[in-house]
Each structure stands twice: as C-alpha cells, then as structure tokens.
Length: 512
Image 1: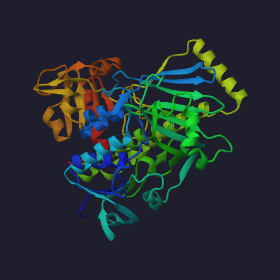
Image 2 (image 1 turned 135 degrees about the horizontal axis):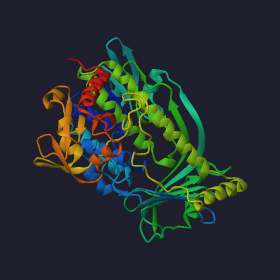
Image 3 (image 1 turned 180 degrees about the vertical axis):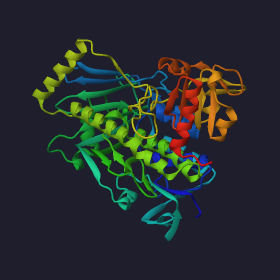
Image 4 (image 1 turned 120 degrees about the vertical axis):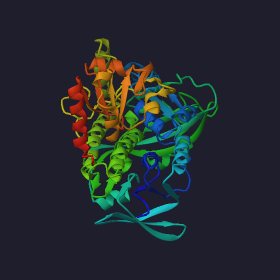
C-alpha cells in the first residue's frame, strides 16, 4: 500500500485529522474535490479546546490575525429585556486560550491547507473526487477521478470527512438519527465599513416572535446576521439583497455594511447511528449535523479529529490493538448528542413564533434572572461534558476532563505546556516521589512531567490556567493525560500511579 490511510474531504475536520496523522509519521492520502478554499464564510465560532488542537498542528498564533474573542452572548426579547446573559469568555480558559473565539473561515482554511501540504508524508490531491468505496480483507479502497483520469488506492483505514452527503457514510450503510429540528434561516455575512452601534465583542439572540434573529461577530471587521424565515417566505425570495437590507435596517445599511454572502439554510439535528464499519470511519458533518445556536459545528468535527488521530496513530504503528478504535464513537457520540440536544433546546427558545408562548417564555426567564439564578459563562471544560464512556476510569474525580494548559518553562524551553513537553500521553505529577522510572515510562510512550520541579522532567508554571491547582482541587497529585488532552485517570500515591499506568497500558493493549 502506498499510504496508511485515506482522508476523504479536506475541510477543517479532514485537514486537521490528516495533519495530525502526518505529524505522527504516517503516510496519508487526502482527496478533496474542490481545488480552492471555498471563498465565503460558513462556520464562525470555535472554543478554547479547538484552539489548543490548532496549536498542536502549529497555527494557533497565526489564528490571532483572523479571530477575536467573544465577550458576551445575550438573549433578549422584543422589548429589549435581557433573558439570558452568558459570559462569552475572553479570559483564558482551561486550554490556555480565550474561552470563545469568532473567526473568518476562508482565512482559517487557507492556513489549514498550507499546513497540510507542508506536512511530510501527506499526499494531497485537490480536484480529486471520490466515486466508489470498497472494503476487502486487508483494508479499504477508493476509486477517484482527478484531471479526467480514474485512479484507485487501497489503505488500512479510510476516514470520511466528506460532509453531510458523505459517500463514505453511504458505504458504511448507516442511518442518521433525526433529533427533530428542521428550521429554515437566511444567513447574512457582512463586512463593517462604518460605525456600527453594537458592542464589537458581543453576540445576540433576538428572541422576537415577529422575526427571531441572531447577530454575532464573525471575525475582525465582520458581522453575521441570521434571520428565521417566516411561514410563506421562500428561499428564492429571501436570498436576494433587496430582501435583506430591510431586515438589517435597524442596525445599518450600505453606508456602514457591505454584503459578503447571503445563504438560505435548513438547520438540522442529525447523528449517524454507526461511525465505523471495519476500516471505514466517519468524522465531522459526515457523522453529525447540529443547529448553530451553540456554534459547535466546526468544533465538533475537530474534536472528532483529535480523538481519532491519536488512536489511529497507535493502531497504525502497531502499538495498540484495533479494538482501541471502538472507543472513538463510544466517547464522541454522547458528546455530540449533548451538543445537538442543547443546541436544539436553545433553538426552540429562540424560534418561538407564537406571541403568547413567547410572553410566557420571557416572563419565566426574566423571573429566573431576578431570583438570582447562577450566572452562566462559557465553560472552562469546553462546550461539552466530561467523557463518561470509552477510555477513561469510571468514578475517578478527574477522568474524562480536559487537563489545563498553563504557560511556563522546562529547563531552556518556554511556552505553553503542550509546546514544551509535547502532546503525547503524559504522566503529570506534583511530587517527584510519585513518579515511576522516567525511562520505563518513555518506553511505554508516556512522557513524565513534574509540576514545579526545575529538573529535566520538570515544568515550572508561570501563567494560568493552573495545572497544579487543578490537581489540588480534586485532591489527586497525579494525572495521566491522553494525547487529545483528556485525562485518562488520576492517582494519589506512588502505588496508585503505578496501577494507573498499568491500567492505561492494558486499556490500549500496547504491544511489548
């Protein structure tokens, strides 16, 4: 075989997955039907966990030029009453980046593609369209067309990152579970050309029965509006500038806004029943589609890529049994369902067209705020709950949670934790006496890290978020952290640390 695996689709999910696999030393063929990056914005939001993954592939610093943090996310009714006020999270969150960012997708994708094509071992075929998928005893094959020629390639694993109409999903033969949300909206992207009387870092949901509307930053100098289509309105009529300017009039017009894109979408909530069939796997929109009310579409796909990449790496390198891949859907599907269901619930709050029911909603939410309901802020965990299934220890107080990424230094290297100590499996302790023999750990592909220690295996924290304080809060001085930055498990004594390492080794079935 000329390659270890094939990734079909070079959107953000496929590009990140292929880059991570290439960085791990694997030979990857990427098939992408579009020769150029799609020039108009689609996704606009990512959270800190996703920035951490982009840091891992080397573009987090460049991302700053095309992104901006979100300060607040406000739900308000037609009278201007605030129903919900979420701290959007400009502060540094668990992953060491702002909790919530808005960005310009074409510029992000250009960075991702540039990183992809420069990654050793990755063979990228732009303008290549996959036509047929087949499965044999030694792996999977794909027939594709490029430059008028038909070609065929066989690999051990083939991953479909090929969107909502996925050819790979059809080859798996899995159905999509419909979570009952189907609403038509017109999405309007603009460039700000003059003064706009809106806080530049604030996002809004205008929960107005006359016309539910979303208004969010969309990267530096840009704004996005999303208007729900009302009964009787057609996509053809509402997709024209003459229909959009009256909707924008309360905020601005041609004197301060330039239209970049108008697109009518139906917001769906769908999850594939099976994400893997033998050597075929799904990721991103091929596996799930979510309404945009949490801004988690792109985030969910990149979480898939980070979760799947390190497991494929171990299996392809012969350092883990193939059954490790079974934990992929077991971990990601509950995350996705939670994100989709929360997005649907938020969408139902926003999309209420009945004035009487909207008034009842408003009264209940205003009363909850007046009663001192807890303030809501963008989650330090990311927009997902901790892992509950898969490769984590049941009942462990830290298992399944994201491990913090502080800034600091290790001997003569300085920067964020992942940059300094790497993104492999890490055993992080706050006391050198808890650490097994470092060379034995490295023989098992586990990197030892001693917080607050100036030695060769030490890392001195100097910037939040605090990793040592996180361990202190759960009263466990040791954590085994997976390559996707989720905690496998924690321990309190040297003996428990030894057991933790043995348990992880057995769970991934490392070969001697």
